[in-house]
Length: 207
Image 1 (cartoon, rainbow, N blue to C red):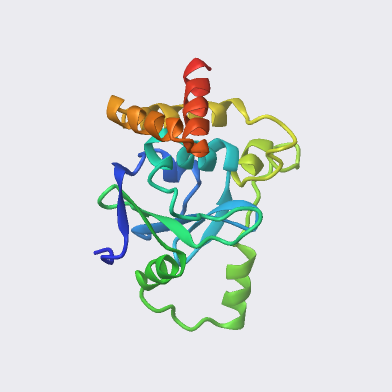
Image 2 (image 1 turned 90 degrees about the vertical axis):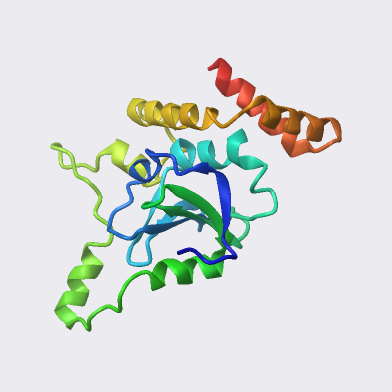
């Protein structure tokens, strides 16, 4: 059970989200945040970066979520996160929580680790980051993008673009007329971010 301080968000966990982020391991709860210039997932037993432009930005900047995260800071290039998203794989729910509490929570979901030998520790460290290698002996570009690498140098791969569009389309189902009017009302009151998100939503709808 999640702590009472966790705030459940008004959408369920997007069914493709964790696969797009290449989450591995068996932890029920996964923490998601932005750290050290990279979108990051953390299960308490493993962590890795994932695509900002293909996954993170389409998620947190979507109208279905953006207005529910304005009082949170999930991390940026200029500051460490004070909050994190928590994905509940079992109940298919999405929460936002204080970052420190979120990290303790995902760590505490696991039983204590057994004591490792020096050789086991070396093997574990060596397996932390494994960059897929293609038949030409070079790292596979698409998989590097999925780790959030080189995204500003080249456009997203066609497959990642397609998956990102599917995530956006899935989130669109939560954008009802009432929510749109909420954003419009805020924009009329001079809320700059509300107007920006409305423009972003319109641009994506036209794409």
